[in-house]
Amino acid sequence: MDPRAIILTKHTFTFTRLKMSMTMMKNAVTRRGVSTKATGGGKTKSARVQDTTSYLMTLPGISAPFPDMFDPAGLASTASVVDVRRWRESELVHGRVCMLAALGFVVGEQLEDFPAFMNFDGSITGPAINQFQQVQQGFWEPLLIAIGLAETYRVALGWSTPVANGFNNLKEEYEMGNLYFDPLGICPEDPEELMVLQTKELNNGRLAMIAVAGFTAQELVDQQGIFEHLAATVADDVVREVDVLEKAAGLPETPIPFPGF
Picture 1 (cartoon, rainbow, N blue to C red):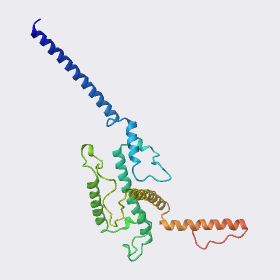
Picture 2 (picture 1 turned 60 degrees about the vertical axis):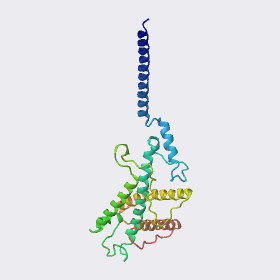
Picture 3 (picture 1 turned 90 degrees about the vertical axis):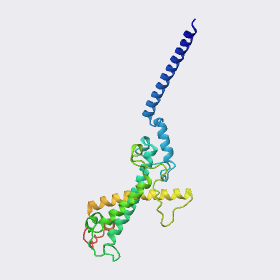
Picture 4 (picture 1 turned 180 degrees about the horizontal axis):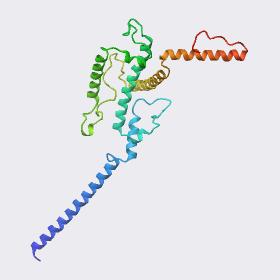
């Protein structure tokens, strides 16, 4: 047999095997790509949920009466760690704003005519939900500038550049809510103490969000200040209790010394 024919046959066989191997590799890569796209990051849905749950359990904010995370809507079951980090940042920001807002409701309504208060002339009155419309020019401009500067700093510190996959995501090295703002030096260095303090902040922020929603709804209903409404409610309850006791004792009903009841 011609040696050249033998060599040609060997080369043909080798080329065929190489082509088959490349085809098999291509098919494997294609299948892997489809699987990765379907499950997200090469992980199954159950694996992603487990990763998200495990990450959530390491964060502050878990406290009694819920020893595990409180998630009645099951949001964690469809979220990634990236989503959770963004949600926690949002929760912290809104909680801090609402703690200030809850304080503002009380201060704004109780110090309307206090000499040291900005509203010393008494030109702004009534429930807190109607006070911001009464503020004159010269207050909003500095406030908007201050808010803009604060938000610019927060975004530059914690948020990724909004391009490609970094859109609407936090930086990986950013610790949610940590803006390095501690003028009183109360932030502890011990990790356990820091976790406790962060949990207290979250719980107070959550309560403040509920409180501000309640304040707003109540003032929209009766157009009364928070403590004004509270005083009227307590007085009404006292009068009703007295009426019940007098009726049970067979006594005449005591006249109400003030109108409105």
